[in-house]
Image (cartoon, rainbow, N blue to C red):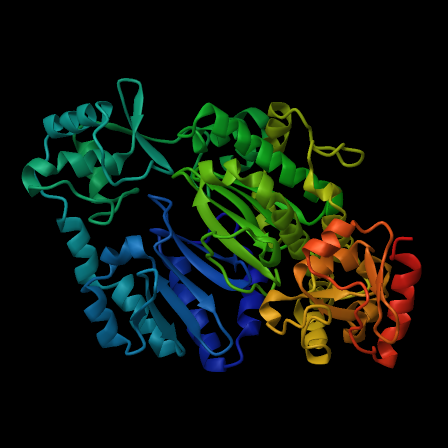
Length: 552
């Protein structure tokens, strides 16, 4: 069935992206079948820059399957935690599809290029009679009311199990709520000889799991507020600050009080940045299992109920080491997605903030819309977070947080580049790279210079590409001109950048009177040295450096 945030426009974009008509018919067949399935909620969307289509289990809220839309075909994924859902396992998948493989994350993938491929995959995963029968038969007959009461008692005692919290329905007993599948999974142990897991059987209306519980006179009710992804009440929850706040607090309930406070501060910090800079290009989506901040079409920040978190960062500023989950994004050029625990992310957010904000700017600048995400926006949660924060979100005039990294002139320069409307995203990234002495500018300087003129070091990996005429004072053309650069060792780059040294056109070293003599001596710099004549094209830049940068 279609999810509550289904967007026909996104699906149309995905289809148009395919070059081969055979691949388009394959897409049509997978989508047609997905819409007809009662056990899954289908959703076209984006994962970073990737055109994505997900299958969400209606009962558990998990996403066992998804596929990526490439130019020539569809790359279908079976998620690692869901492999048991494939009847016959990997061997069965490989027999049907020679392209089937296992990636580095343990996921199974298969390429779908034709309608026939899609039909075979649908038959194997979703409509194979043996698969459905096998799932039903995994729950043994003969479960008694005493078995169920015993399972409830074990859950009350805190017994561990593999089931996630239910998404749409609860078993209600003695005023308390329980995940129906978790109850049946434990209740079946006496007869099955083991605890059943989440992928041994299905939940939801008309499932054997629900039939058993109802036959034994147990009450199953929709979760308060309609927490299913397609329930109409979700719109009311997202709009109401109290209801949205309650759902949000459930998502982060497993965290410490200090971490919960930091989660609020992190979200408010990111929302305020987007609201001030790109007021019409962001949404905050709320789901019983997660809260997500979207800029443009890209997921930029996420906190999940299972304790996981992710953030999008500008790769050039991302601290190392961080676990990288994404590649180069079409809708977020130069950005990466990193994943970690909620506690780890908020604890180190201060050092991630600059890279995160610039990544959001890239997303907002690159894509003007928010697609189907807009339907899941939660203004109620924004209001709730404002009330919890000492720094409410305002449209204009919001003072920065103490120590806000956007006060760093370098970061401010990057933000100014990304806010420009006269150039495209690729040019923006090129200019930002040039400011950092990277990318095209660095390559040009290396080809022209090749070594540090002062020390003679030619190991370019250890040299900096430094602008002669400062980047902030240069035109776009000058920012990228290799003649406006020198390759310098870090210590020499510091002196040159701060105006303690410069050069004449013929290569004589100029040392400012303000340069500490002890520094020149310690770094073994000869004040009378000549580094060789400069090219004609470099000399106007050197003249500017001597006039405007070199200290008297």
